[in-house]
Amino acid sequence: MVTTLLGFAAGATLVILAPGPDSLLVTRNTLHGGRKAGMITAAGTLTGLLIWAITAGLGLAALLAASRVGYDVLRIAGAGYLIWLGATSLLPRLPGGAHCDGRAGHDSHDSAPVLGTGRAYLNGLITNLCNPKVGAFFVAFLPGFVPAGVPAREFSFLLGLWFVAQTGVWLTTIAWLASRGSGWFSRLRSQRRLEQLTGIVLIGLGIRLAAEAR
Image (cartoon, rainbow, N blue to C red; front, side):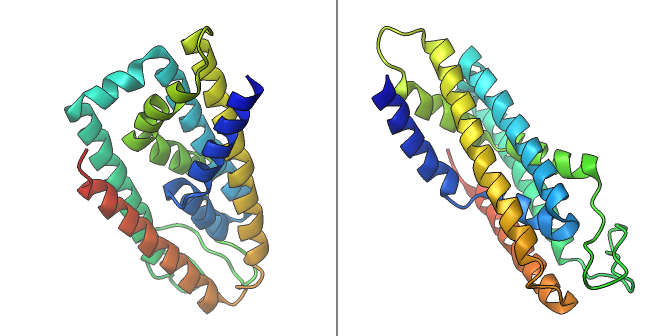
């Protein structure tokens, strides 16, 4: 059992550390609204992962993986949302630090643009839930670590919780690093370049998700 859990932890670590929309979105929102916004975005992402873990344990994610229409609907919705988030990062700021999409800005170079708690949370939740690859991952990855002779549903759910916990540690680290790094980019021009680069990568991830075939 211990060997199985350690093997799962090692495999999960490789998956979590791979660059993806969730970690990039936490970075983006931390740059926009500070560490609190990044942590709230991470909480939304973890909620999405928990929902996927529960549905995988109940077999619903397997049904989604078998349904091409359902998979494609989620894939296109998720791609569109990532592209929209990336596009908002590219919008120029109006005088005073505001964005052209109507978000309030900051009065000085040292403060971050306002990002509402609900908006940050929904960013993380929607991005995760609209990525069918997450559900397919749980269906394909978890069963391989379920030992013989144990209840598959309950043990899969345990592994899912472990994965959520590991992801939480990683996203929290990203939010902390991004908030510390924002001091290095205190000049408005440098911070805008970093935000724009993040936006371009988000758009690229959205396009890749939209273009991927099952």
